[in-house]
Image (cartoon, rainbow, N blue to C red; front, side, top):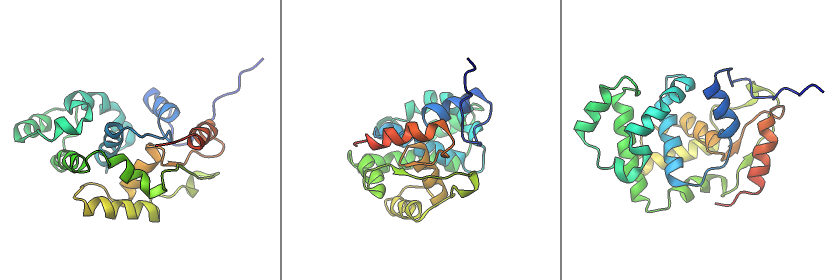
Length: 196
C-alpha cells in the first residue's frame, strides 16, 4: 500500500522549519496572551523580510526577548536595545525592537483583555475561508484594516493591515489553508470546537 503524500499550501517550502510551522501552528486558534503577543511581534518583525528568515531566528529571539513575555519586556531599556541591535542572531532593526517593547506596554495596559480584544474582531469565532487557489487569499481585509486602526489607536506600532491579516492567519483567527491542503480540515475542526 502506497502512503498518500501530505498536501500543503503552496507557500510552504521544503524547509523543515516551514513545514513544521505550517503543519503545527499556522491557522491553529491561539488564546494565550503571551503566544498572541509573540505572533504579533513576529509578524511585525517579518515586514520586508521572508517568513523563513523570521522562523530561523525565532528560537534565538525567544531566548533574547524573555520568551516574548510582555511583563519582562516592558522593563527593557536602551542597554538591552543596544545589545539586541548588535546580535546577528536577531532581526536588527531599531524600529521593530522599540515597537516590540512599546507593544508589550500596550499589552500590559490591556490588563488581561488583550486576547479578548483581538478575538473580538472575529466575534470570538475563527473564520473559515474556502480558498481553492493561492491568488484568492487576500493580503488584507476590512477586518484586518479595522484591527490595525484599533491597535494603532491604542498605541501599538508595526501593526498595519497586512501585518494584522498575517497575524490573524497565524493565530487562527482565520483559516486560510487552501481547501486542498490537509491543514484545512484540521483547522476547521479546531475552529468549530474553539472557545476563548
